[in-house]
Structures are given as C-alpha cells and as structure tokens.
Amino acid sequence: MVFEGEYVNDERNGEGKEYKGYNRELIFEGEYLNNKRWKGNCKEYGSKNNLIYEGEYLNGEKNGKGKEFYDNSEILFKGEYKNRKWNGTGTEFFKNGNIKYKGEFLDGKWNGKGVEYYHNGKIRFSGEFLKGKRIKNTK
Image 1 (cartoon, rainbow, N blue to C red):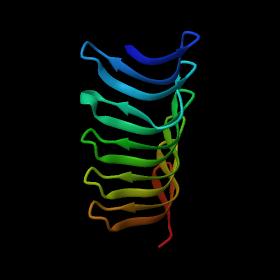
Image 2 (spheres, one colour):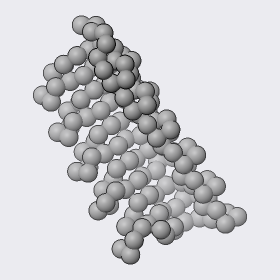
Image 3 (cartoon, rainbow, N blue to C red):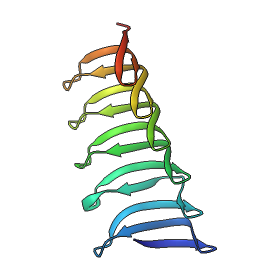
Image 4 (cartoon, rainbow, N blue to C red):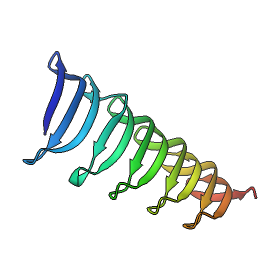
C-alpha cells in the first residue's frame, strides 16, 4: 500500500490518496485524521478503478450520507450509513437504475417503514419491514 498526501506527526492528516499493487491502483481518496479515513467527500474504489463508494467517513468507517455503486458504476444505494452499514433512511436500486426499495434501514436490512418495487418500477409492497422481511402492509 502506498499513501500520497499530507502527514502531521507521522500520521495521515489532511487530503490524501491510497494506492495498492505495482500498478498503483487507486483505492481511496479523501480526508484523513490521525491515520483514519475521515469526513468530507471521500471516494473508495474497487478493481479497475471503479468507484464503489462516495460519501462521508467517521473514525475510519462509512458514517453519514453516501452512495454505493455496482461494478458497472450504476448506483446500488444512496442514503445514510452508520458503522459501515446502511442505517437510517435510504434508497436501494436494481442494476437497471430503477428503485428496489425506499425507506428505513437497520444494520444493512430493510427495517421500519418502506416501499418495495418490482424491476419495472411498480410497487410490490408498501408497509413495515423487520430485518428485511415484510411484516405489515399499509396499502
């Protein structure tokens, strides 16, 4: 791993970029505080420099608002993160760009009030979810 950026007291602090491998493949760019990925508009990359996450970090983990992407750069999720997982309100998408679910999340699962959609955009279920399962229809 190679780091290119600002250091204070021998720790990553400020703007920087992380690279891996001999080809110096970019894996992260953003702000650091005390050697940890921090806040602001950070970007995380997967193989072939595909953007896989863009958003906020706190204490080295995805926390705050952000967007996650499929390998083909289509959006997978847009919403709130806490401790690296989807927590709070957000929207999950199919690979074709249509909404799959819009509502509340807890620990990466549909949890609370939300709406589930078919691939074609029509509503499949509207109601309450618990740990990813439908529990109460409110149609």
